[in-house]
Image (cartoon, rainbow, N blue to C red; front, side):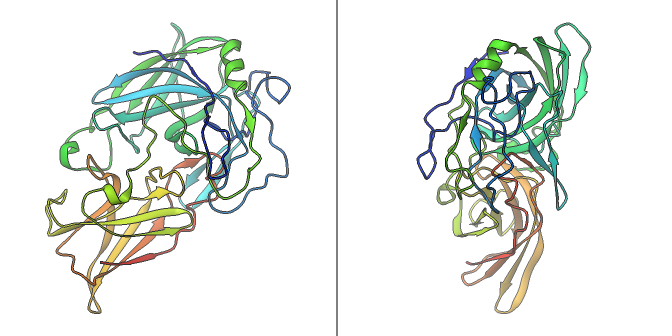
Length: 362
C-alpha cells in the first residue's frame, strides 16, 4: 500500500474563473461536531438552493484527505475521504436523495483504474468493509457516483466509532460489462485490498479549511477537475479517438459523440458503432445507461438493437454495436432507454435524467 496526504484546494477554474479544486458540493456538516462555517467544517446549505435543470455550478468546494493506494488484481485503487455530503442515487428512472445523517462522520470514496492505460473502471460491483484497527470488519454500502471536481468514483457517507485508525477493505467485483481488445478476458475475478484510514481532528480541520462558497452557484457550468494523483474518468477528446467522428449531439447535458470504426473494429464485424457518453463541460464518463440505436439506409432499417456497455483500451468505456456496414448517407438514431445508473453529487443531480433520441448522418 502507498500512503498519501491531504489534498488541498488548488487553483481550479470554471468558465467563470472560479477558485476551485476540491471534492464536494457542500451539502452537509462534517459529522464530527465541527460543522458549520464557524467550526472549520463544511459550510451549511441554505433553503434558497439556486438549482437549475441540467449541469450547474455546485454550491461549495471543500478538501479531501487521500489515505492510500493499493493493487487489487490487475487494477489499482485509492481510498480517500471528505466531510459528509448529500448526494442523489439513481434507481431506474427515479432519483433518490441520500441526506447527511447526524451520525455521519465522513464521505468515504474509492477510485478504481487500470494502471497501464489509466482508464477508470466503472461497474465493478465494488464493496467496502470497515474495521477499527485490529477489529472486526463491517460491510457498508457504497455507490458509483459523479462529482464535478473529482469525476467518477465510488462513495457514501459513513458513521465511525470516534477518532482513530481504521482498516478499509475494498473488494473490486468481477466486471460485468463486455471487455474488448487487450482488456478481453481480464477483470472478471474479484480482488481485494486493504487501506488504512486515519480519522482525527487534525485531518478534519485541514479538510474543512479548504471549504469555499462559490459566487456562481446555480449558473450553467461545472468546476474544473481537481489535480489528483489518479485518473478521474475524463474521456479523450472525441476527435482523437479511433475511427471516424460522425458527429456529437447533446441531450439533457449528456454529450453523445458517435464514432464509426471500419478498420480494425474491436469486435468481429463489418463496422462498429460506438457512443462515448460523457458529461457536458468536464467530459466525465457516463456509465451504466441503457442506449439503443437504429441505422437507416435509403428508407430501410438495416440495423436495430442495443448498444452494449463496453470497456476497451482504445475506446475507453463506451456503448457499442457491431453492424454489417456503414455507408455515406446512413442515418443513425441513438435512443436513451435508461438514464445513467450513477449517483450524483450536487450540480449533476438534475442532469442526464430525461435524455431524448439524437440523430446523426454518416
